[in-house]
Image (cartoon, rainbow, N blue to C red; front, side, top):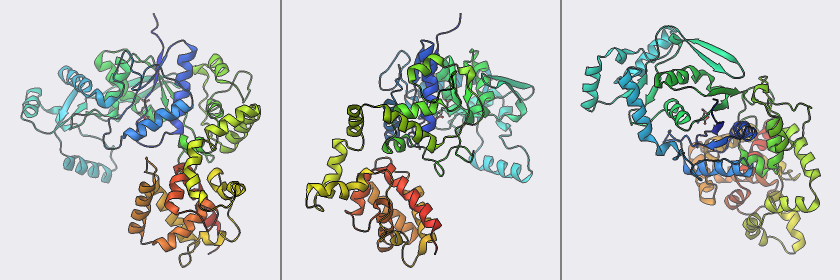
Length: 484
Ligand code: GLU
């Protein structure tokens, strides 16, 4: 008897909600919907240093915006709760012990220093990198004694030394890897928390996931996962690794070349249904080769086996074109409703009005004055453009500074507010030696297209992270093209 279809999306809440998460979620959701199964949301927050509640909230919010509804998840519970890995640590520990007891895993007492030295040696000798399995040779009684004495250790998977592991991928067929190429993966860290590999396999099994549909980058982990299923004596799910989304130059999609945060697309006024439709075209072709289709039509036609592996290019122009088609299909009342839910939402207008109010004389001044708050991209006023570059620094140095500010100080902000923006600008100035007199005018111009604006921090906070990011990125390009 085949098992009930249960798919899942398992994001790690370590940053902005990523377009790749939506892409993988869409295919998992569609399969579950087509086959009358369940779609589960699980939060993989085992990396305690990098995981944040703010990121988790944003991911859930973004998936809701796309209307990819999950049947079970941390917010709505379900028969396999909890759905947040940080609340399941006892389960992973117990499973790691089970493997140790059966000889499929072992405690490793090697210190960080030893592992670093080993790695350096292997690098120098151009040898295969990986743990040399020293602790695997310890007698179990000796290992147990050292553990009982409280000696710091991790638990590692004992990969078979000989032979091969064959893993099946629905789209790629059988992938065979020599076991000697696979490292003895750490399963449980010295703080007792699991690594991704252990937690992911244990949860997929306990949550009765039937199909693991995920990004291609996880393929190299597959032999370890298959070995874990074997060691536990569990039947593995169907694995299907989706092709990576690519930038226009065919490199792996990255924020340097393409906006990757779902928040960007929302702020840029892309309709959620257009984005979903566009993502569905990444590796999928409708039988009648239509570009525009509803999610219902997609679900009805969708076959996991028919996904094509040629790296799909995430092309902003095509997305814009498709979004335009969706916009034109709306009745004016619907379009109004979309505007009122987006750029013209009361909550947004109420944030910008205090900044605008002091600077206008008539109601008629509002639209021309506030244009930069409402637009996607800004156009630079003719007299403002030369001031995009800081005098005395020049365009190239200004481009470099803006990029550093963006990537090192603004990108990491999850809760975008006046204080956080101020703090980021201050920390950038401390680190770089730029001062406010040099920095603020270029930022003002980059963000608003003008030289006279409401106060910078408040303006940035009101514009929101995505508009700021987008405009600063464009300013970097414009500065790079400027003559010194
Ligand atoms: N937490 C992993 C991620 O964020 C999940 C990968 C998987 O689906 O197995 O990509």
